[in-house]
Amino acid sequence: MRNTKTLFTHMALILVVSIVASPVIMAILFSTQTPAQIFSYPPKFTFGTAMLDNYTTAWTQFHLGKYMLNSFIIAFAVTTGKTILAFTSALALVYFRFPLRSWVFVFILLTLMMPTEIMIVSLFEIVTGLGWGDSYAAIIIPFLASATGTFLFRQHFLQIPVSLLDAARIDGAGPVRFAWSILLPMSSNVIAALAVIQFVYMWNQYLWPLIVIHDSSMQVVQVGLRMIFSGQDATNWGIVMAGAIITLLPALVTFMLLQEQFSRGFALSQEK
Image (cartoon, rainbow, N blue to C red; front, side):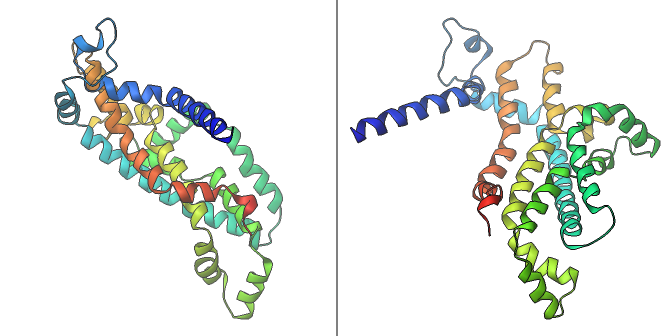
C-alpha cells in the first residue's frame, strides 16, 4: 500500500514537472531542427539535424556573446550595488535610532508598489538630462536601490540576538566592525538569495534598455535576442530557439550554484 502511494506521488510529480518544463523542452527540441522539421505535420518531438548550425549561427552571426557580456556587467554591478545598499540600509533601520525610523521603513516598502513601467517617462527625462544616455550608468544606477533587499535584511537582523550587539559593544567593536565581523558572516544565505533574485531580474531586463540604449554594441542580451527576428528575411525559429537557450544558461547556472543558499535565505522564520 505504501509503495503504491509512493508510486502515484512520483507519477504526479513527474506529470507536474513535465507540464511546467514543457516550454523549455520544446525550445530545446526546436533549437536542433530545421524550419522544415519545425513546421512538419505531424510535429516531430525529437532532436533534429541542425543543432550545430543553429547554435553556431545564433552565437556568431547575431553577436550574442557581446550582448551577454553587456548583460553580465550590468547584472553583476546592480547585484553587488543593491546588496551593499540593502545591507547598510537595513543595518541603519535595525541598529540605529533616528527620528521617523518606522516611517522611513514604511516609505521604503511603499516603493515596492511602484513598478518601473509607471516611472519610465520621468526616469527617461532624468537620465537623458544627466547625459547618461547610451551608457551603462543609465541601466545600473536607477536600479541600485532595493526595497525587497532592505526588507529581507531587516527581517534577518531582527532575529539576531541583541546579546551579540551588547557583547560586541563590551569588546569595543564599532558599527563597522560589528557589521563586517558579525552580521556579514551570519547573512550569507540572505545575500545569496538576494543575489539570485537581482541577477535574474537584471539579466531579463528588456524594456528599459530598449528605450535608453540606442547603440547596438551596448545593448543587453534580451534586446539582442529580439534582433534575431529582424536580422532574418524569414524567421528561422530553430536559430531563435537556439539563441533563447544560450541566453537562458547564465541565469540557470547562477540559480543552480546558489540554490541551497537561496532556499535557506527565505527560511527566515526558522533562523535563530
